[in-house]
Amino acid sequence: MSFAQALRTRLVGEGFATGIGMLIDTSRNGWGGPARPSLASTSTNRNVFVEQSRVDRRYRIMNWCNQAGAGLGERPRSAPAAGIDAYEWMKPPGESDGSSDPLRPDTDNRVVQPMCDPLYGGGIRNGYNPTGALPLAPPAGEWFPAAFRGLLANAYPPLP
Figure (spheres, rainbow, N blue to C red):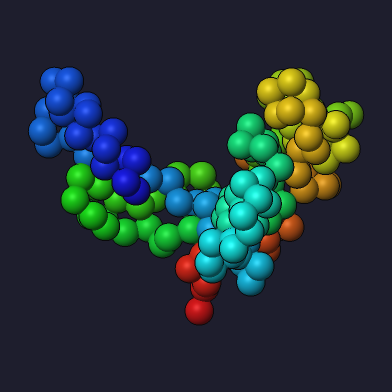
């Protein structure tokens, strides 16, 4: 949220209207469920410290498709903080980002995105890391029960 507030301040400073607000999509940033780090690592090794302390468990930030380990974030609500108009779930929870099967194109016949294939070895944009995508994903926009169950299980704050 501090990033969004700082961005808003900068935009107003550059001439945007003072009434401008920010929306934050929290539909998939719960990350971690019961394995979510609650404290910073005590390691003195920089790489170990970062790895053990980070909440976002994707292999790389460029991995975006049907991510294993993603969870629902803050519940939608209005005016959670100064300059923030709302937390929203812009991406409907349980909606697939794209097909994991290269032989099953999305409904509008778009080429299947390699980042949706859990077996794809990655490319230059994600440092040749695994995609972290869930297997058996349907085409983009279709209901994906396994992804929805994961979002519920990994929600933070936890669901009642």
